Image 1 (cartoon, rainbow, N blue to C red):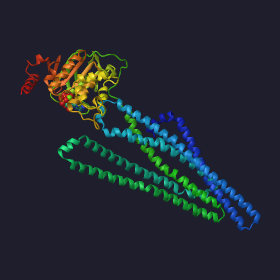
Image 2 (tube, rainbow, N blue to C red; image 1 turned 90 degrees about the horizontal axis):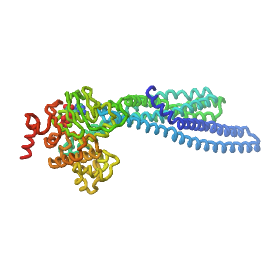
Image 3 (tube, helix red, strand yellow; image 1 turned 135 degrees about the vertical axis):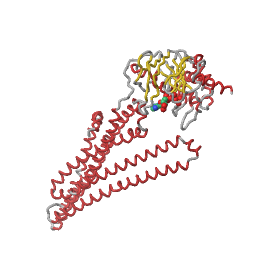
Image 4 (cartoon, rainbow, N blue to C red; image 1 turned 30 degrees about the horizontal axis):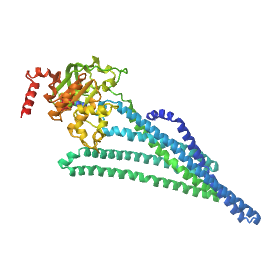
Length: 593
Ligand SMILES: Nc1ncnc2c1ncn2[C@@H]1O[C@H](COP(=O)(O)OP(=O)(O)OP(=O)(O)O)[C@@H](O)[C@H]1O
Ligand SMILES: [Mg+2]
């Protein structure tokens, strides 16, 4: 149980609640164990009366005895009812304390995992599948919870019931106790084996469940491809295959589950038979009273569940151990991008690349080779180049989504690794290449850049991004909900909302990664001219495939296969033979046509 030690800190956090729970459990079980002796006592007194009757006692004495027996029975019944009600109430309290604590611990653990998700860098997400990540927070945590809650609760149950019940039984009759308990180890072991089988099969069922979910998710998001290619039949076929397999696995699981109760009933039955047979013989020989037989049968019923649970608990703890091992391994991961500086400072906006060579870890693609350039505060740098040339990679390095190992990225002439990461992220406005908007209102999406933004600021940002007119055309204006159950924006509208989101941040560095590709040249021009007004003091990076986006920049660099092949101003570059001039002439022609 090495891995589960991690949970101990939570146990100590909730120690009082747990302790009360344990005490309540112990007390509740002690109470429940008072019932069998009372039943036995009642039966014995009835038998005593019957014997007295057989022995032809005087009528007066007999009547006196009957009255005594009746009173005794009434008292016993009342006590039994009282004990049962109280013990039931304590069981309720036990769940309220121990199971509720397990829910608290589950909540804490989930939060811890979630925070780690937020801390980890981009690279981690590329190396792990979404399904596995989701599983860690749902499946694995719930298995650990089973250990924290039910497993511990049943263990205490089992220990108390067995220790006390066993002592009570032994004190009455050792021989009968031994016979009664013969099937119990068998019960424990078979439930353990069965639980292991069920756990294994239910893991498979879970895997299929997540397969089906993933399949559907992908199908839903690709619905327009599916419809326009008319491949519904294929999709149905594929779905049928998975669903069929999933059904088989479920049936397989249910077969194991179905054995659970019959097995228990069988073993209880054997125990009870032994009590009746062995106890009956002892009774005939006058070794025990009739009440003892009934008392032992009650013990069998009380002890069966805790004994069966030993097997279940053992297998549950093994499962929890494996899940916690996965959680621990994940929590131990150190984010690649570390914040080494906690003092905050304002950026000026100087960006310098010094001989940067960058290779992606997972694909081993060298996206940048010996890239050097420098941009002063307030300047605009345009980056052009064919697809896959490394443009977005430059941007990712400036936002410190990755760290470079060769060469240096400097902000305000300081290595970016030495600057407070929060400063870097909060003072850069980034419009990514594939725009992502959340399924919330347009207003909220823009406010992502600045949570405290006023309405005027939101409108000003939207105007600068040239999307204000589009927004107010929607019936609900800025309150229009986007995404799944809302309005679908056109590609260009999305790009412009995400530009507004970056502008409203009022950053020191503004980055546009090819985000004017879906707007027409006229709108592009308007946005760019708005930008020149607001970005006087902002260092701006414009990535584009179009010369029109780049021509007003202070500096233009052209990338090819990760290397800078040309740099200069628009006027310098159009006079030199090369990619820029070629692009310029080609796009000029397109415009004229
Ligand atoms: N996250 C990544 N992991 C691994 N390799 C990547 C990653 N991103 C990009 N690459 C690879 O690095 C190279 C440069 O990609 P990059 O995205 O910088 O190109 P780009 O110039 O922005 O292209 P585009 O104009 O198509 O956006 C490509 O070969 C690409 O396959
Ligand atoms: Mg790109």
